[in-house]
Amino acid sequence: MSGSRENNLKNIDVNFPLGCMTLVTGVSGSGKSTLVKKILYPALQREKGIFNDKPGQFDTIKAPFEKISSIEFVDQNPIGRSSRSNPVTYIKAYDEIRSLFAKQTLAKNRGYQAKHFSFNVDGGRCDHCKGDGNTTIEMQFMADVVLQCEHCMGKRFKKEVLEVEFGGLSLDQLLEMSVDDAIDFFEKENQTKMVQKLKPLQEVGLGYVALGQPSTTLSGGEAQRIKLASFIGRGITHDKIIFIFDEPTTGLHFHDINKLLRSFNALIDQGHTVIVVEHNLDLIKCADHLIDLGPEGGKNGGSVVAMGTPEEVSKVKDSFTGQYLKEKLGN
Ligand SMILES: Nc1ncnc2c1ncn2[C@@H]1O[C@H](COP(=O)(O)OP(=O)(O)OP(=O)(O)O)[C@@H](O)[C@H]1O
Ligand SMILES: [Mg+2]
Ligand SMILES: [Zn+2]
Image 1 (tube, helix red, strand yellow):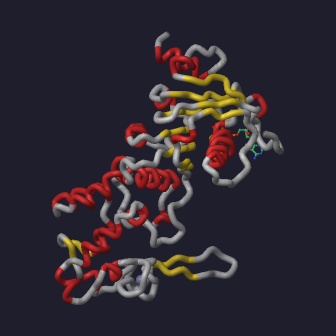
Image 2 (spheres, rainbow, N blue to C red):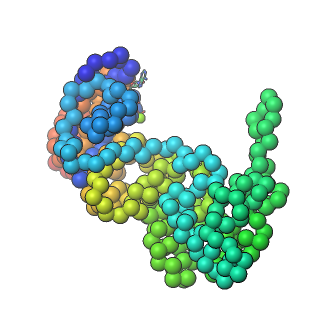
């Protein structure tokens, strides 16, 4: 396959096994992101009849694609543009929360339905900010100014709607709770379904995030982990997916890296395949399969230096990753 050369990848052959974790390694500039984003992802999409960007140059990619239903590139782009979208709306736990409030006696007496507890339709949300909690003033020649809505004081709902309580909490109080606290709260209230829905967020290391934190304020890494949590939350289905991550551990604390690794294993246990671009050497020894690019960055990179199990890669003298593994594996 030919095309204009926009990167340093030579025509390459890669393969990876399904149902386990493959790591793409190599020094900075060796072509890791290019391989997963510009070649693997579009090429695999094509195998599934989805035509997007033309894949870059490659010779062959070997894997039994007929066993795969889709490919997901889990990037760090925001989970939504509106401040009305947040972690619980993204993982589809918000419907449950709305119905819970609608079931309370006060809500029933006043004739409130689930929609009255929604940000997205008129009725219960603040009419002034339309459930945003903020209003934006467009400034000429300057960046827009965002102010807290003075009608609801940033609480997003009408005062009378917030009078409805579940377990002693109003809707806005619940939305301000962290995932960890909310799990404890729902456990106490015997809301097993809510606990189950929130667990994946905790598992990917997002226990500290507020249920209703606007998606526009989440970091790239947080957005990426919310996407991961939503896939874990689907549980075991017939769909077998290849998940691709580009440097998901950047900036993560050691403790959270372990959580992320457990989440990858959860996906693998559900029968999925995980491909991760990774610098982190701790992760390298946990991989089932490696694709090591190099030997250097830029023009002197772009080739597959080593490929196979950590054991096999450790025998390749020209591979930096191989040398590291050799020490670690002690052979
Ligand atoms: N669109 C492009 N135009 C020109 N050069 C490019 C383009 N995309 C990538 N490159 C070059 O190709 C090489 C590989 O880039 P790539 O982003 O794949 O590296 P990487 O292995 O992911 O590095 P890092 O670990 O720093 O993320 C680099 O030298 C980069 O400058
Ligand atoms: Mg990169
Ligand atoms: Zn308002």
